[in-house]
Image 1 (cartoon, rainbow, N blue to C red):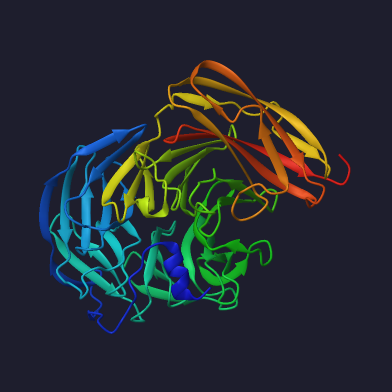
Image 2 (image 1 turned 45 degrees about the vertical axis):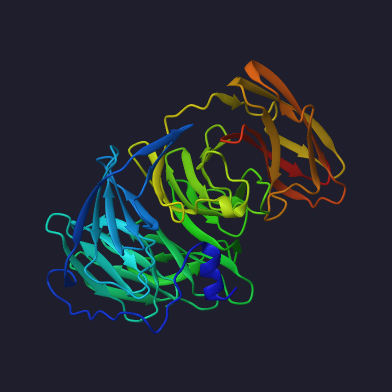
Length: 476
């Protein structure tokens, strides 16, 4: 996959051209060159709510993207079409800070936004720079990168107190230390040289994703020592499907695969990978997980094509997916392009690029119905074998509840050689408890190995799914 095609697959990008506005960078003790004062505007936004989701519609066409949640419950996010950044409070008050420069065309690309060193910093792809705003004075600063087409992408706060970021087209990872000294590390090209995100286990163990090489489009997870940058592959040259985001946890690394319908987990203890499928959608083959973040046992991620925010409860192996529109999207042109999100204050905040919303899913929201784990969530079959499983559905729903299936046979998540059938195709209405029986049959041609299965209930706005493990062996 060529780099430009890869970026387009990731969602929204501005093609860099000769119309770039060049902004010179002169190092200074103020951490970047001061460009001027931001133009500040205030708005009071109205919100809409449905099934755990609250959304604020932005005035005009702002193209929101790149977001970070703060401890006070507010969020900062990029506005590509201003260009600039905005500060949104949960009561709907928004302060917009337009940067003191423009482009022709006006739209830049902002994917990373963080609070660091007393400022709010954002990646400005069209200017090939990292832009910082002093929210108290309104002063705007910029740190130019070494290549005009570097395309600064995601930004990560490192355990060393430095600001780390990826340069998507320059094949580099950048680092700004506390004194604002810029270092740029060249990446090995044999994996593609397309860094999508950086993460850290501690101050000596860092990781980054390479989005893919030119010929195959398959990506790789690599490790490095932040003090002595020399990347090494994880688990050999394991290939991931356009990996776009990672989050390092205490027991492993979660990876969003943007050219698939599954998120991946690399276990430090087992030195192995497990894949978790998403619920299928009717209008596209893949759901395209984009970014991933964790807060303890909950793993959050967004599904670009499915128009979902999703969370995996790793303790109970359950999945909840929230539709980001009401009614739910029914075709690709109906999605909101929710590309980035951030966790904070018990909320999963997200930006919707083309729908022009910023919103959140309330993590404390309890859906009106649930699905239990299977009667046996760890099953073993030989090719040609089958097993019957029992699920309990509890709660209330006036809307019909459909039953969907997914697995990890292929990148689409759609079952082919693992046949799953239920004793009912849908539950017409729910008031209390019902039992659903599911038969799982392994086709005789199914390869030996481990698979993750997903049984999902959906009323359209909320998906509730249960994961189970299938071990296909030569002898059951």
